[in-house]
Length: 111
Image (tube, rainbow, N blue to C red; front, top):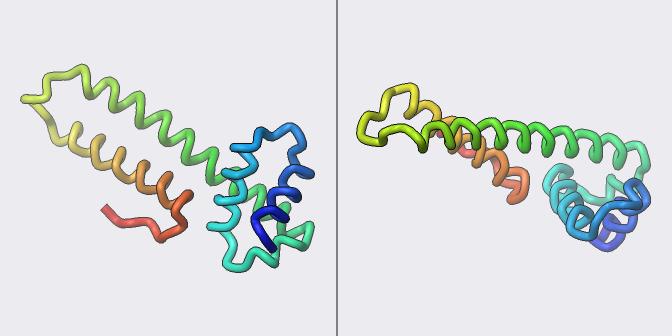
């Protein structure tokens, strides 16, 4: 299956999707399944679509939560960083790694 074929299938699933959203889902689905040809099957495409959507939503939610924590952290005195603040920074790196892994498709790096 080509990217164009997958995009056409995605547009059938979500006709009101913007072109950038269709392209994003093509990339995410391509990184989710080992063989794009399996997505010719309606059931497999639907399952992959749902799982990919859930992963994307989860990553977006985690990213939003971390952004809030980092904004609070940025308002504090940097010269008095605490162990808890270091943990916030490490979690932020992990969340960024998860988001990047969705798009790049490589295994997540352990931090």
